[in-house]
Length: 404
Image 1 (cartoon, rainbow, N blue to C red):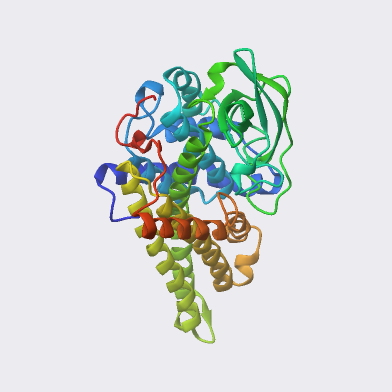
Image 2 (image 1 turned 30 degrees about the vertical axis):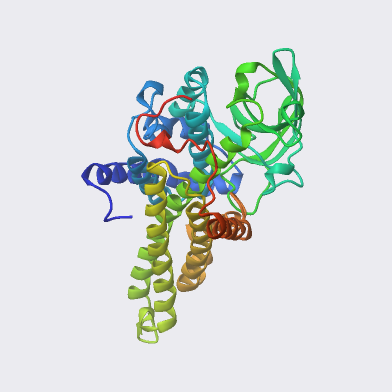
């Protein structure tokens, strides 16, 4: 999103572009081949301050704003071109850390945020279950009161970072709080009865460890409950909103090199005595990607502005996620078409990024679900002047942030 950053933000963007290029990109193909997660790399990224650009200084963050973090994230995404690392990163920072900052107590923030921000600990946000994806209200992980604490039983499935996570924020149905009440809990994964699976074998995003979490009479104390009994959906909706906007920032960063490289290649590659850029179909591929990127950037800027102002921007967040996933997939496919067999080879990142882009069609909600969200909000606005969720604490990014 060059052109919107001030001088400080440009410097931050440039710094984290170099971090992504130098620390992450050289080993991206290896992690993809070996289905690997590099904990030392995670710690190295933590040491650069990336996890805490927008987190309060009292927890080890840099205490900057959402625009500074977005500049860092866009630069980092452009530099690393590693959707595996980026998906894991967004799952922790946009879901776990952001939701915790907005809804956690001061004691919870003091306990959990510093090791996440430093990169010493890895977080996961456990929502999905078998047979329960986008329909979060139908989840079956069961919580029951046990003295002053709780016990959890059930299975979470297809959870980003689950196989390697040290800290888990999970959502369970607490019947004592009401038939449809969902509650949010946070715990270390090294708990008796909590089992982490090996990473699932996936087509793409292979640098992202995705797996299951099994809860068998897992005992949690009262301090593990976030935002009160039966109040978990507010935490979840907030996390979704932030994740979708930051995903748009990530994909904005990933798409820019694709467009630049396709343009340069098309100007240099000769066929039948002229550059392939003379062909209108090649021009069309590049113009399409550039147009989609500019449209995405415009909506992301609006979303960031609404988030900073503390407004419910769920419609914009769904538009961002839908546009971003479609735009990245189209851009990757067109990059391979322009580069031909060269782009199809596994020693170039287009092939890997194309496989990774497919996972974004359903991670964080399918395009069909986002269309439903947009439609529902449009109808609510037409009928009653707007649909707004109560107690979405969107003011976490207006300053240093404060505990609930």
